[in-house]
Length: 137
Image (cartoon, rainbow, N blue to C red; front, side, top):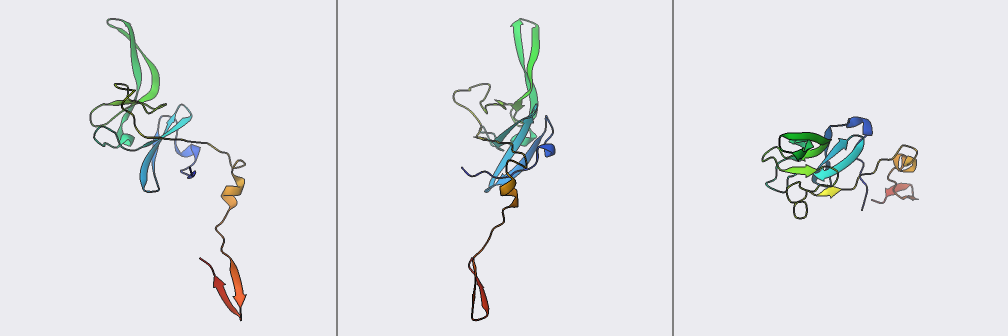
């Protein structure tokens, strides 16, 4: 797999997302309490853009009429039909063994981690023959 730079950590505050296009794919990157997760920006149900979904919590109940909201900001609800996906795994909350959204691996690196990559420029061999300069592309 080839890593593609998609932005800076400061560009996606906690609870927000950013859409990027990588190699022709529209990918949405979510910041969940400082952890970053990336998915194909398409609901597997009928293709809604997940970047427009609502990020919610997960209601849990131990008795009728009583519930508490847990995992706040970790569940993504599709904007069209309300299908819910776990932002940490990409799995559907209704059928986790069968339905999921395509997930991409995310890594965070500091400038010192990838210093050489940031300073690398594409180079081309150059030769001089009888005062004519050639560049190999």
